[in-house]
Image (cartoon, rainbow, N blue to C red; front, side, top):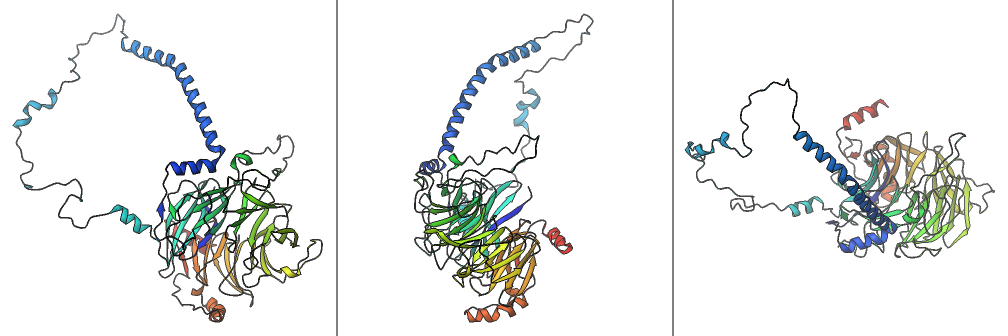
Length: 549
């Protein structure tokens, strides 16, 4: 599998602990992991017992064979050549095994001593701590603490990266003032990651005590959706973590890892059948996540099992869900007929959800009454969607055919058989528009990324755009703190932070809007085009490839 970055998420300034803590695997943590893993650890125990019994059986059966081998060795050692024509050869006496005469140890004291004449008085110390002449002592713990320090003026950027079939979260620190981007730590994932969502609510099953931050009572977590039906929530204030702080789902019930046969091979293969949906947990890949910033304990998830589920993070995930089984999902919505690709909460109306599906429809509904929602039929599969933070009734949808549509909820019908038109349409990319984000600082400013290897920033009020080439783009996200800073990544497995303000055209287009919003756009040197990335060994070859495209 080629290397790629499938999702990117920002962490706002001041939300991260200044000194992250190290993961501690003690008895209490083992109990927590055992409760979250459920049957997995029980299966491991049973398999361990079976392996132990098998080893005993193999040991008993092997003793006789090994004994035979030993007898064969003894026979070879005692073997004598009985050939009558063999030539007798006089051989020198063999030295004894403990004979050290060849080293002439008896003459050792007669050697002339020359070592040490020129270094008289030289004193040796085992380490620098015992040397009184070294006054600046090195503290390894303090040095590591300084290396892991995250300043209140730093942003974190979390990427979901897969390289050589190994998936992990990589956490980067971005210092906007110095235009510095560097890796901080990473976390291993069990399967290919599909989506990320940052949240500051501490899950009920978390073992990470909330470290002292600028916002007491708030945490720093990332929710991850993968090809597995389970949702993992990791603390970003803990390094070298071996297990997530919370798992939403039932790995012991889904059996998603068991492949479904497609046919006998004699006839044309059939499509994989959809797994039977469950109310309490997902049974297929998690494609989208959205955290409710108002009701901070709520997390919504979209899945390939055609459902949207609502999770209460304040509940222990081992508690009973809607169907009475342990799992944690408090609601399940069946509003689509195919895989649900994206979901997002409305920040102005915290009970309203927006969903998009491969059934080529988009729907919005109140989570308290999902049957009263409205929607629209689209001309292609949904890739991504976003509410407009400047209008509580407007939203954007990006499609596989390269279009971006803008809708007004108030004009959408409840019956999808009725026609529904978009307020306006952007022909954004020559290929799928895999990501979209709306600027929370500048009205009318959106960013899109597509499989045509372009990241485009749009001023939808003036219908103008600017672009950067970055390989097939899978994720583009605006910074929560800087008006014109974008993080983008995709098929090249390289994270790039783009300061759009370095472009003179962008400054002219958005300068007036920034002044209206009370923000100041600082002009910077555009020697690098406003793009900040992590240096790599093959960076020059990548640059040459971009020029040839």
